[in-house]
Image (cartoon, rainbow, N blue to C red; front, side, top):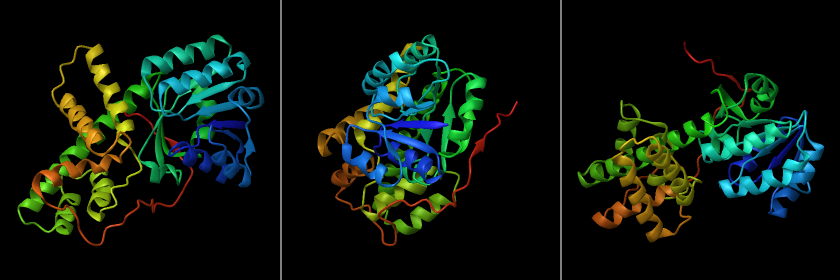
Length: 314
């Protein structure tokens, strides 16, 4: 199977790297020609353009920063879609938009999958990330061998669009958790607690989480570089709020989180690292939420292994 990959940024570069590392026949494209050159040097082919990738590959994967970019790429590929062609959308995007684009691909005779990832850039780098896949079961069976080279846990979630709904929900939860972790660490620091001990106390408690075990380390080390920026956070939590509004669900916490992140962007820049949100509380209290012994970069220490489908409990 020939695979094309469009979008070699923070996440896409790591996911496509897993495909290349595992020996798949890979062609790549990105607006940044240096990214493409780096992959070509490692053995990938230069995909030249989205249109060319759809012409020459069986599967074309997109991992792009926003729905506008996805629309532009699919529009360029669409005249070359036909029987045997599969488009896989790995961007975190609007569910209605991925349904619309997927319908165009299917109408042209191809197949479509929305398959965003969850678990952090450091896990994307080692093929240990989780992937949701929304598509027909027959399509899922075709792309599962590709997905299992990029992710450890693969969940078929039914129709196209469902993955995007689930993905923005999980990113909302992660952002809410980041805000509460920042508050918890700051209150403990103000109370005179040792930050290293506080980290361990949370880690062994019912209040622990993936966000704590990753982003708290970046906060305490002072690196404040979790490799996920505030503009991406705002996109995701904004999409979650949009879903709630569409279904008339009166959320209370979500608007507060959006306000907090908006203030963070005003203070530190639209594309500031998301874990710099701790600095709002540091500035308000005069405290430094730091501790010795924590890494400045997240590294996935799990051994890489081929992924598999997660079976839903019934």
